[in-house]
Amino acid sequence: MHLALTHVHSILLWGLIATVALTTIMQGSFGFGLSRLSLPLLAGTVCTGNRRWANILGVLIYVVVGWIFAYFYLVIFQGFGYANAWLGALVGLAHGLFVLVVLLPLLPQFHPRMASEYDAPSEGRRLEPPGFLGMNYGVQTPVVALIGHTTYGAILGAFLLVPSG
Image (cartoon, rainbow, N blue to C red; front, side, top):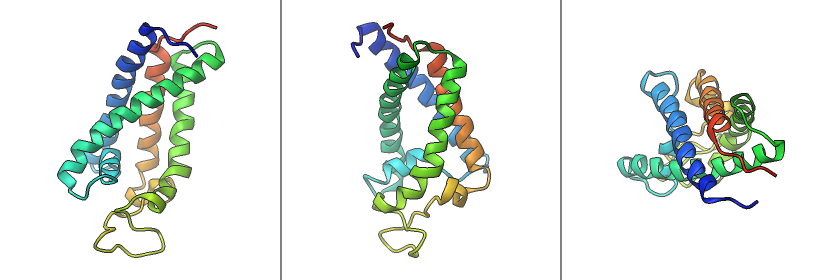
């Protein structure tokens, strides 16, 4: 797929805005006690055990990952031949379901600081595993994650410049 400079700018701008919206929804739910899931913290603690730096690093990682996913959304939209908020929301919903059903339960297998469902926390692995649908982080976690990912997709579907042909 050939991307013109305007498409790269579109990915950078709308990928950032969509990622900020997703992160705001997720962190807002954390702040209001609806969920204990902090995706930036989980991303940052892969690299460091210092929680303060993990949050900062995690936000930076999350923005970069948001741009990468914006590119994949663009590829999906191009495959459909169009993009709009509804298609973006559906892709975001599928993305959120994949995160909740597949990625979060697998996270303890490769996260260096997360306990598993089968082993108790230890000195090096103090983070609680998210469990299926992230339910270990609160019963509202799946709903909040789906709202956040659906919003991410809707923003990209509505505003990304999709190359024709």
